[in-house]
Image (cartoon, rainbow, N blue to C red):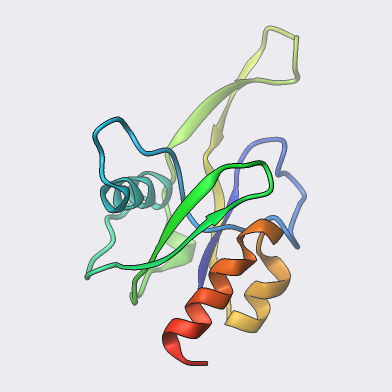
Length: 134
């Protein structure tokens, strides 16, 4: 299972429970699958190949709905190139710093992913396990 650890100061130094699937907002008029492909490309620097299949729709702890897709593939996680964002940091200093949206991507065995994924996304692992049978 490919998971990402977000960039920026909030996620710095976090590991267990900080990993998640690449995701983002759906633009007006955009289909969920198109948004998922766009976000994957923005966050990892490559367009996913193959045919994604619907995995699950979950609601995260903060209330955000996430529609996830599964895709079998091969990606060199160490070679990702993420888009970047600017953030006033430290807060209220007037100084802006540039951060990668994704600090790191990594492949995990399903059992390992359970220990690392953001708790509110763990139902995605159950869905994937049900999909692949094991």
